[in-house]
Image (cartoon, rainbow, N blue to C red; front, top):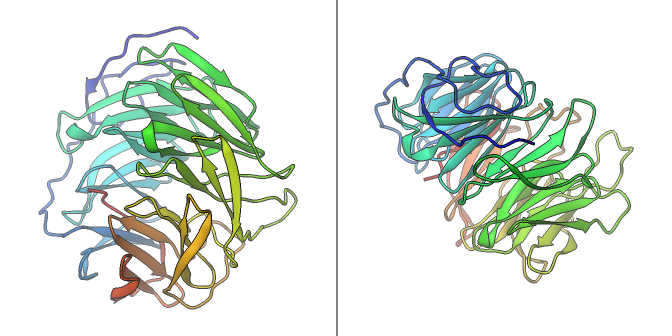
Length: 387
């Protein structure tokens, strides 16, 4: 793979500028962001069929009702104002602090993973294989900096940029995904590993060690080298992970029935990036891909279908306590359908309950619900600003 010059372009994106396999930053133009009033404190956002509610993170008062048709997904954009919205046509920036959708768009069908790390927010567009790297320091500026890279073939992938400028990106095509490649800051390949069938998801642990999920374990990237950690079962899919800068251990899901229409697992995985080992913990209840989070001290948090937050000590690999939040529930067969979700910011946990059309705010240390909002629509995705 050839190298290229690493450059930043000051641009707002509205059109896809590059069709090259490897692309620098094109001169991509778009409308400037709508200026927000900044009236929403510690914003939290939830989607519903036809729009997005923006709530005050302290009181859970609904501050804005943003109309937006289609199935939309949410991720923190990486600053204290914005949330990235995945729409059918691309990524859109929501000014959550101002309670309004901006005109800033990163077009492309099948917008996928959004990854925040080391002052960068990386967007992966599945249908094009395009990777966009945003500088969080300029995200709220008309002079925002965007770097573009394109994978050899489009696929459902993910990418993350490290503090030293290295880019980790998945390898695959529309038919199969096989592993990851690591590129230096000039986008010259350093190393790769293709022993990761069904590669999906990522998390960063303490000391900037990256974990990527596979259908038979995980790949760990540390200091220029990739290590494979195998699942304890022949098929052991880890497709969703949650990491913490305070812990060398990554929390992952764990599915072991390759033929299930919908597996409802009760075991979670704990990947120790220091020892290269993997442990399974049965929490006594099933969970979904929206159930995993980390606490401010690196605690592993899993929202179970028993309606409880299971607090896990990663080092001891055991559940230390549970926090009751909702009634028991069951995961729907279709992944796009609403189900309870968890979002954590500092020591505050937010849990949605679409069955009762409620959103709860929980003090993690105290283990108590401190506020509850009743919503007019059944909510689906849950997120918020991170800072």
